[in-house]
Image (cartoon, rainbow, N blue to C red; front, top):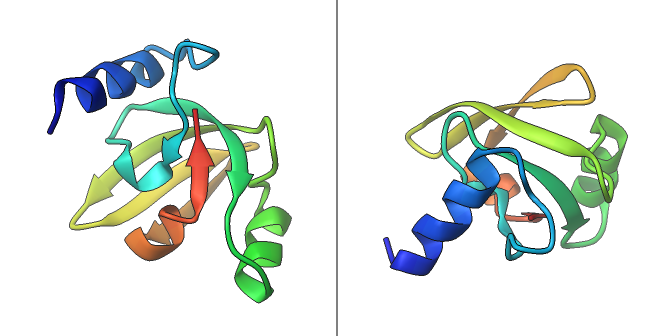
Amino acid sequence: MSQAMVAESACCKTGSAGAACQPMPLAFLRSGDMANVVRVRGKGEVHHHLENLGFVEGAAVSVVSEQAGNFIVQIKGASVALDRSVASKIIVA
């Protein structure tokens, strides 16, 4: 992992996501990291399903656990399971 990635992850881990945190896919976060949704990439059913689950601009998301590319995240008071391909569509900072 590059030094920049470590710095970005550490920024989001502290919950101080903001201007200093560069946008990156949710799939780059690890257990305990927190960030805010910047946007959801893609179109169609997956995009709309993610928005319905609460993945909208500005929503706070935290990674509860991450194993083998599968994520359990907390968003708007709900726990949601995502695989790496879906987590890669969600851009956070």
